[in-house]
Length: 93
Image 1 (cartoon, rainbow, N blue to C red):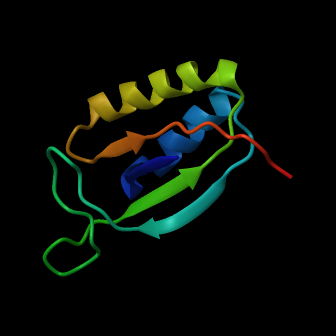
Image 2 (tube, rainbow, N blue to C red):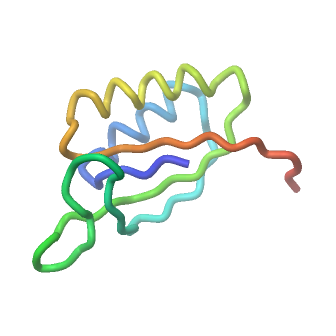
């Protein structure tokens, strides 16, 4: 799962594509606040920025390269915000 400031949209999709992670589900508007720094993303008058979230099932060997690309993106624009989480998927249909 990747949650990110909407300004990262094109770069996150590029990271998925360059990692050969083809399939994903997109939640174009999500809200949240980082655990350590940065402004809330609430879509309100006081906090107008918004997030998007992508869930993608990625083969094990593609996870680390994708996380590395996302980390580089996040480090380049710290105030925008980007978080990625990895879960084990036990079954799919």
